[in-house]
Amino acid sequence: MSTVLLTGATGFVGRQIHRHLVRQGHDVRTVVRSCSAMHLAAQSSDIVETDNLFRESVEWWAEACRGADTIIHSAWYVKHGVYLDAPENAECVEGTFAMAEGATRAGVGHVIGIGTCMEYRLPGDRLDVASPVEPSNFYSACKLSTYHMLREWFAPRDTLFSWCRIFYLFGEGEDPRRLAAYLRGRIEAGEVARLSAGTQLRDFLDVRTAGAMIASVAKTRQPGAINICSGEPITIRAFAERIADAYGRRDLLEFGAMAPHPSDPSAVVGVCNLEGASMLLESLNESTAEAEN
Image (cartoon, rainbow, N blue to C red; front, side, top):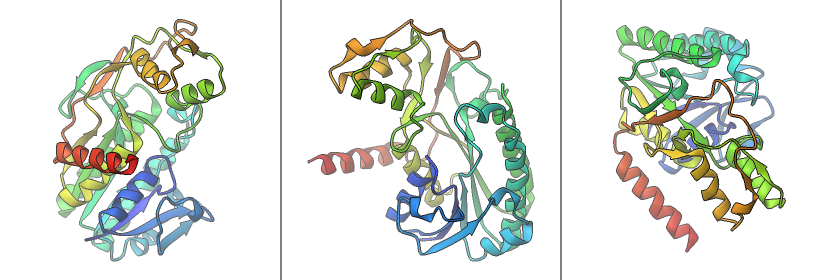
């Protein structure tokens, strides 16, 4: 297997990518914030520490990337509640380009970036990679700009470039203020969860599955934009009820108690174009069933 350099390896998505890269047999070099290696989801003997990877120079990146076959760049500023309009997004763009320059100097053959479904024009109940793009906030504008920038930078340099657009993730390690974690927290405390009417359509995906899907791109080397999604539309109400049913406590869901955010799109559902997605999901389901037994 190849040597994969992974940024953001201690984050919500990055931890899952790291776990699956190791399971697939890759040698993984993690770039992490200083003194944060204890939060890695899998063992790593090749750790590069930095106070802020988005402020590192091209020369620093060229050295960090030396010997790596593939980069998966999952690091970004994603502080809950503020990241959509935060100025730190611009720093992420600049720092990502420094990484790209360093990668080409080091001869990295494949770079995988992480985008967002918010790059598309929303709402949309069947968003494929050919759908129109039209970001509606600073975060998604910076992500889309990074996609275009890296695509054009790598194209004449014979570096394979993949861009994984993630949809609505939930699961292990998520911020307690996110929907699924909020619901579980309220229900486990025996308290009412106050929600909107929940009519919005969404494409929800377990972050563990998303991590496996992104990690698989290092092996398949699928180029271009890739939707990391379930492809299955579900209303927020039905999603909340599914979580509540695991506790037998639908009575703790109070729909219509909150007004939806004015900018909240009525539908965000993707079309999955990941190569080998069906086989990968079948394998993950079998592994989950074996673990439960």
